[in-house]
Amino acid sequence: MARADKLTIAAGTPGIDLMNAAGGAVADVAQTMLTTSDLPSVLILCGPGNNGGDGFVAARLLHERGLEVKTLLLKKPSSLKGDAALAYAAMSEAGVPQWLPLTPASLKKGLTEADLVIDALFGAGLDRPLEGGMVKLAGMVNAGGVPVLAVDLPSGVNGADGSAGGGAVRAERTVTFFRQKPGHLLFPGRGFCGVVDCVQIGIKASVLEEIEPDLTLNDERLWRQDWHSPAAGGHKYDRGHAVVFGGPVHATGAGRLAAGAALRAGAGLVTLACPPSALMVNACHLTAVMVRPLRRGEELSGDVEDEGSAGPIREMLEDKRLNAALIGPGFGVGPQTRECVMAVLGAVETAVLDADALTSYSSSPEALFFAIAGCRGPVVLTPHAGEFRRLFPDLFSLDKLSAARQAAQRSGAVVVLKGADTVIAAPDGRAAINGNAPAWLATAGSGDVLGGIILGLLAQGMPGFEAAAMGVWMHGEAGRQAGPGLTAEDLAPYLKPVIARLVEKPGQGAHEIR
Ligand SMILES: NC(=O)C1=CN([C@@H]2O[C@H](COP(=O)(O)OP(=O)(O)OC[C@H]3O[C@@H](n4cnc5c(N)ncnc54)[C@H](OP(=O)(O)O)[C@@H]3O)[C@@H](O)[C@H]2O)[C@@H](O)CC1
Ligand SMILES: Nc1ncnc2c1ncn2[C@@H]1O[C@H](COP(=O)(O)OP(=O)(O)O)[C@@H](O)[C@H]1O
Ligand SMILES: [K+]
Image (cartoon, rainbow, N blue to C red; front, side, top):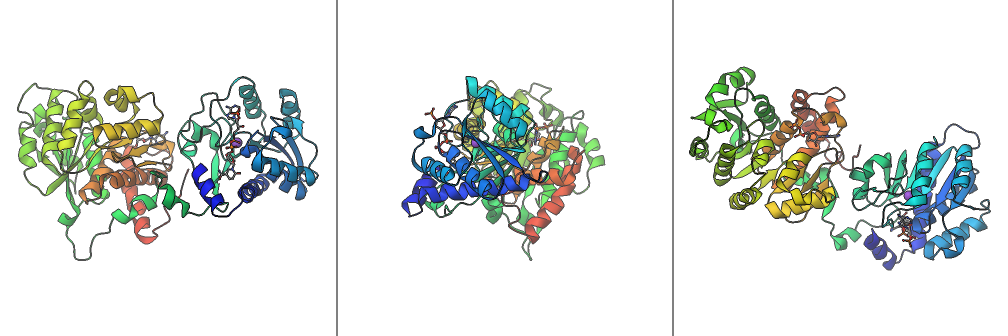
C-alpha cells in the first residue's frame, strides 16, 4: 500500500485527495449504518497518523451533512503532520465541535451518547501490539455496545499478517482502500473486521504492474484462465484419470469422499484403489467411480511390516493414463505408507499428499521433500494445522502466511495450509489467502473432499498452484451452497452448480469475502 500510495502521488494525485476520498467513503458507509435515530451522533476516535486523518475527513463530512459529531484525539493536533494535519485544519475550519483528548473518562461519556463509533486510531501504520492504556480503551469500545466502523483496519490488527497480539477494536464493518490486506483475511484479524468494504480512492490498478504483488485474495482471477470446459469433440481421457489410494476396510470413507469429489471436479475418470478386503464395501457405495483391488492390498494399510508393499502401486502406475494420484486420507500411518508415497511420487505425473501421507513423515520430512523434488509434475500438500506442525515444527510459530510460504519453498510442493483462512503457497513465492469458506466446513471428512477436488483439477492438467487455489475456492463455494448443517457427503453434489456458474457467469467469483 505504501508503494501504491507513493506511485499514485508521484503520478500527480496529491495525498490529501486520497485521504479525502478515503474519509468520504468512511462517511458514506457510516451513514448506511445509522438508520435508527433522527439526529444520529457519531463518536470518532482519531489516532496520531494518517488513519486519524481519514477520521478528520469523515468528521468534517458527517458534520456538513448535519450529523452530530464528536472527536476524541489520542495526541495533540500540534503533533499532526502532512495530510493528517491538512485534514485536521479543514475539519476545524468547517466548525466541527471542539475535540477532546481520548481518555477512559471521555470515551466512557462518548460511548453513552453515540449511535456509532468510527475507529480511526491506527491502520496500516500499526507497528506493535496495543499496550497498556490502549488495550483498556479498545476494551471499553468493545464493551460499549455501540456499533463500530473501522477505518482501514480495526485498531490493533496488523494489516500485514492479521495478528492482534494486544487485542483490537471489534468492528461491525471495516472500510479499506484499494485492495484488501492480509489482515482482513487472516485470523485473528479477520475476526475483528466484521463486513469489509474495499473502496477505490483514486489509486489506479496499473500501479500493480510496477509493484508486482505475489500475494492475492483467492478468487477467480487467479486461476480461471487455467481451467477449461470440456472440448466439444473431446473424450474423457482428455480430462485425466485420477487415482485415489484408499485405506483398509475400517477406514474406507475418506477415500470414497475424495474419489467422488475428484470426479465431480471434472476428472475424466477416477479409480479408487484399495486393499482387496475393502473392495466390497467400496464397490457397494460407488457407481461412476471405479474400484480396483491392489494385490497385497492389506499390506498397504500400514498394518504389516513388509519391504515390498509398494510394488502393486508401481505396477498400477505403469499405466500412464493414470496421471494424478491422491494418497493419505484414511490410509494409515507408518513405514508402509512412506513406501507407498515414494512409489506414487516416483511414478505419477502429479500428486496430492494429505493426512496420513504427511503424518508418516513426522520424523523424516527431508526424505519426503527429496522425493517431491523427483516427481515429474506438481505436488500439492494439504495439511491442517496439526499435520503442518508435524512436518514443519520450526515454522509453526510464524504467522500463517509466512509459515505456508516457507513450507512451500522448503518442500518444493504447493502447500495448502488449511483452516478458516486457508493459505495456498507455491515454491516460487506466490501465495493466496482464501476468503469464502463457511465455518460449517469444519466437519469430519471435509478435508478429504478438498483433497479430491484438487486431485480432479490436477488430473485435468491445471498447474499446481492454480489447481490448489481453485480447489480451495470451489470447496468454499460448495460449502456455502450446501449451507448450515452440511456434512462432508453433501459437498460433492454442490460442485455442480459451482462449476455451472463458472461456465455461465465468468467473473462473478471475483472479490467475494464472507
Ligand atoms: N496509503 C494510502 O494510500 C492511504 C492511506 N490512508 C490512511 O493512512 C493510514 C496509514 O497512516 P500512517 O502510515 O500514518 O499510520 P497510522 O495507521 O495512522 O498509524 C501510525 C501512528 O500510530 C502510532 N502507532 C503505531 N502502532 C501503535 C501502537 N500499537 N500503539 C500506539 N501507537 C501506535 C505511530 O506512532 P509511534 O508511537 O510509533 O510514533 C504512528 O503515529 C491507513 O491505514 C489509511 O487509513 C488514507 O488516507 C488513504 C491513502
Ligand atoms: N472455521 C472454519 N471455517 C471455514 N473452513 C474451515 C474451518 N475450519 C476448517 N475448515 C476447512 O475444513 C476442512 C477440514 O479439513 P481437515 O482438517 O483435513 O478435516 P478432515 O480430516 O476431517 O477431512 C479444510 O478444508 C479447512 O480449511
Ligand atoms: K482503524
